[in-house]
Amino acid sequence: MKLIVGLGNVGDKYAGTRHNLGFMVVDELASQYNLNFSPNQKLRAEVAKGIINKQEAVLAKPTTMMNLSGQAVQKLAQFYKVASNDIWVIYDELDLEFGKVRIRDKGGSAGHNGVTSVVTAVGSDFIRWRVGTGKPEHKGETIDYVLRPFSESERTDLPNVITAVICSIEDSLETGEVEVKTLNTLL
Image 1 (cartoon, helix red, strand yellow):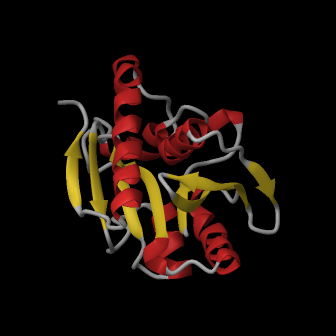
Image 2 (cartoon, helix red, strand yellow):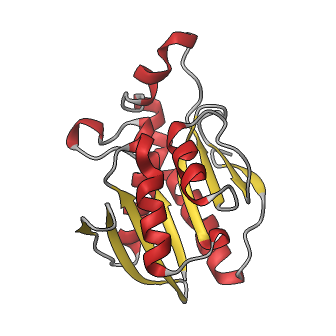
């Protein structure tokens, strides 16, 4: 079983923002496989369970807010008895330009508070889909930038980015292996 977690913030206020890119990916993945999310207070997440590309999977969106995502990931991993390398986390990444996706099998958080929370809770051996958002023009704008909606041109390309992430996840589920690589989804 794979635990596929999209990171984001709950609430309409955050829908469509860069920081909710992980939620957007798992929402689309659930939609494509006719899976429905249900809130689970005990696990501190919205959860959808089913078969994706012939593999049993749990999709999750923590309800803890971004910076406490590890609390939910830890509870989910314990409840479903999932090993660290079967935890796949999808999140926004400032250090990658919009349209790039980097898949990694371990590492640090690169300053991403949601990922720091996950690393603290379950260790660093989980799989990461780092989905590029690019950086703000001015250094001091990071928080405002990630909590803003995508630009009009980015919204046009966003479905291609999300589709590329989903295809990569499906390929990994089909082969049983995660290929560490960087994708340029806008070519």
